Image (cartoon, rainbow, N blue to C red):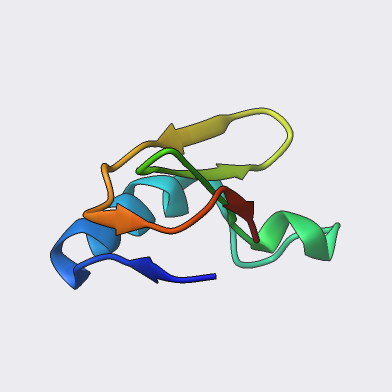
Length: 68
């Protein structure tokens, strides 16, 4: 599993979706991001169960589809 992404691509995506992640969550899983990679597109998702934010920056190259 190899994913290459520049900091300039990843950081804005994380800043945008962090608006849905609060520091004091009643459910610890809601303090995380879901990152999916599929066909040279990365999808970063965060939710607080009321609001969900998704951002999809394009990757320079990705070897395979993955989710982490």
